Image (tube, rainbow, N blue to C red; front, side, top):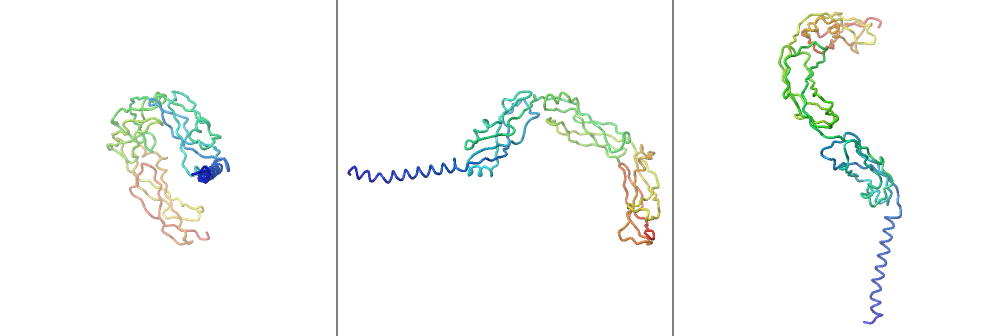
Length: 312
């Protein structure tokens, strides 16, 4: 084969390669140069590398706002994704550490784009040493009644102590773990056993997570009878009369409150006029009772007769 014939056979291949290079260059230009835009995204932050002997007490954020420039096609694609960024906290110490979140730190993960801005550009991390401490459980007896209305004795908590784990600065202020024990305001002369969850301050864990409480309610309850006026619940209450005007009730109350006029008077009896009530016509209506905590109604009427005054 002559040189001229070989040259003719190679020429189509050379032309094909040139066309491919031109097409590739055009595609690169379209993707990388032409139609470059700026866009802003929210990036979720995941923290790694926190030293085991430290706990972060303040300064962590959930996300940052990143402004980038790049090809429109690629930025549109990234806009549909959930963006995440790992932040290494292995360098933090006890106290305050400033961790940069600037463009240089994020650029490596977004090489196809130009990272223009990160907000916030840094986080200020506050860390403390993790310690353990054994403290006693302090039961706090409470109820919805006033102090002294119920008498509780023989209070026992099992276990009597718990292990707290958390920041040294927090645990140094804790001498005991409070355990609220809410007593039934209607209970009297009974022994109670409860398993209650233990609550601890933020960043502090407690072991075990619950305790068993036993106690005896030594206060009693008494029965008494008392009259209460029936109140008409209406903006024009004077337009109605009820019969009887007062109702006789039999009550059971904590013994310590049997002579408390403020407590006994907190019981309210009311009647609501029906929509279709007619002037001068007696209508039977239901009674409504607002009963204070700790009180039980043993005997009560359910209805009264209501009359709307003539001319009203």
